[in-house]
Image (cartoon, rainbow, N blue to C red):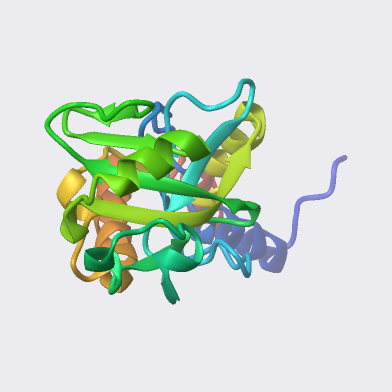
Length: 218
């Protein structure tokens, strides 16, 4: 006769089923999107980061820039031809890859030469000649963001990280990308992601296995 599990063993199994975090609901990954690191991600580079995934990258890689890590480095250190009115504009840390290649994000009614569309009024570029020509055009300081470095993944790698609970995926909003308080952006988007996750699991009771064990313990 098969031995029945002890009461202590049943309680331990029940706790594992009831207390375990529910699987994160799948979120469609499209480009462009915002990747928002979850509080579970303790990577020293990407913890508390918000990343804009950029279209038009080099296949098969998916690339983006961290948009919420401003620095005190003036953009003139990256773009020597920057006009005087951009003198107070500082660069953002965009990620650990290709840190010597600036990425410029701009808001404009139409795409500047050499720019790639992100949204209707949002574009990006990193080709040096195009960046130099754009900067010489003396854009308004509040219409550009300059990043040094970027982040990149293979598609399967990024999808695995999302499934493992490292990232929330959110639609882009130009006003958030150009937030006046970028250091607050991560917390705002995490709260939104946690709310969406809670809604995706709302109204569900214990899973069938846990419910069976509840009856056995009782």
